[in-house]
Length: 173
Image 1 (cartoon, rainbow, N blue to C red):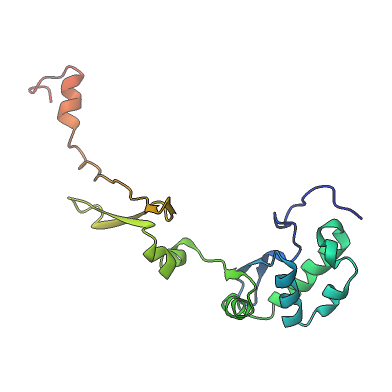
Image 2: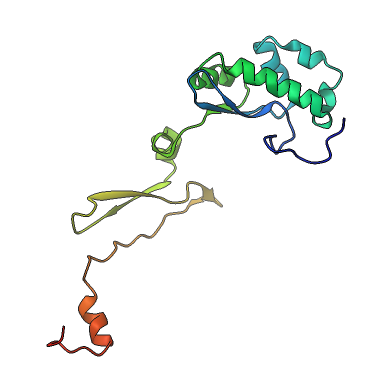
């Protein structure tokens, strides 16, 4: 059978060797084995070389049954180890994969810390001592984007001015 359109759950690349898979520790692994070289390395590592030998492998995105077979094989394989283990192992064989992190984990990654992605805002009052906010974590034309952040006003700072603009005098305020 030939696929006429991208199906839900299938990677945008069309590779059945890409996607998100649940691992033994109930965390997700994002896999992007989008090239034949990466897919072959993955299959050899998880001992599923039958997928490489399948006549549909060279045109992997054209057969829904083959895609389903690959996805089921990968789902079963990735359920055997933790996401962190898979991330390390697959990286060592040049197959792109990463453990899906939540925001609190992601912002402590060395790449994020070095990218100028997070910016600090100091406050003159005790609502927040030092707040970290996200910015843009990449450079364009060799220049990093640096956010210009101003402290928010202290609550009530502008109340008198606004009430005066509305016609209230000092006695009424």
